[in-house]
Image (cartoon, rainbow, N blue to C red; front, side, top):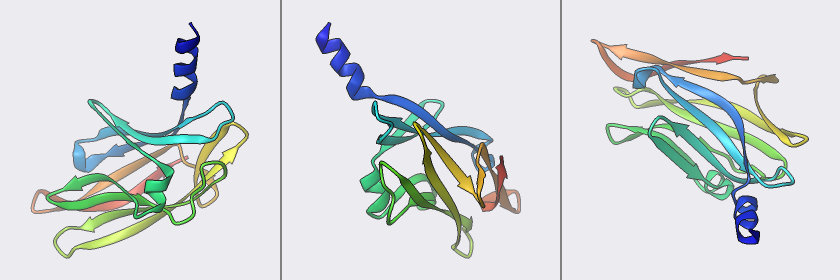
Length: 152
């Protein structure tokens, strides 16, 4: 019984940050979340979607970033930071491929804050509930992300 309780403590609990609906992937739904310990400090981060889980650490986020999605050999969506903290949060930059023909990337800054035992992602001071990635099309083919719509 003690072994079972210890393994539950190591797992932590999941705190959902927000959903991403990706039109370029056929409106696939992703969930960004943190696994936190008993004090609410981040143990790991994850991106979940149907049939896929990607776990990453705060260190990975701060040391070059984490690619969430690749398309045709290129980083289509990447999260990075240079000062994110597992206790307090910080600024996160979502870099995304806007135009694959001209290789243009855009940046989408997000602030992740701790509010007691909860974690909140914000854009322009408002809580993010959902991000909708809209496709940039060229002759019927997806070539990038045209815009990111924030649902508060």
